[in-house]
Length: 353
Image: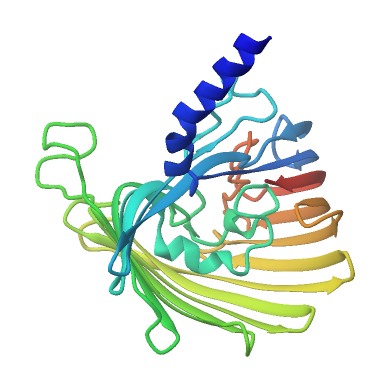
């Protein structure tokens, strides 16, 4: 027994410096699961009951003080399959991950990260972009499956500015790493992406405003450039807040033709004690063809059991126009049947650690 105690004491002494060096590391994560009933009135598989792991995640992050007002930091975050569908626990792979330097000029980082265009909308998102109930089934999308601007880019370099008169600027650049003979590009293509936002967020006044833009050369048609612009706003007053998004997405259909699709969302939330009720209405406009839009209504009720645990119930109804082909962007879908109405009702739990 005495020998074991001595051995443990020596091991503690030897490992103490390692623990001290990593004392600024944090392990964190979130489990987001729900059971839901999903239906599609124009699919042969008209209804299903399922458990969804959504974007359950696990991460580790840390930083080191470099002196002179500089700091190095890292973050590794992966999506976890919490209900066994993937079979390996890895879920959909890497989430926001990278390494960066903070200084007086702001932050420069490299890795894989949400684009500024995507992040601009998160302030008014009710469902963390991860469930069938989310407005991003329509918001940030053009023509159903034609283009999505709700993206997390790999091979990215980002700059995050300090507050400049209350405004913060984020800029993201992701180069096209494919060779001219590779699958990612064709000769003469350059499918790089540039995304940027300018955001004013004043907690005292309750005002949030963000303008964002994204540029995608050769995305749909070689030698043309697709793009998207959006304005997001939110106003908070006590336990109530209301928010809105308006956006326009340009999609090229040939070297000389394109269309601009307009999408919008109105959302509100009210907190009453431990409970929160929220409602979202989103509308996708037409592409170059009429009657190709859709609208979606989502209702959410949440009850906080603690600072880290919430139970929620949700309902959504996504109705396509006669030629609209939108569907749920997460989980197993029934396809994007033109003119379909898709709906979902679910109960879930969110636990953060």
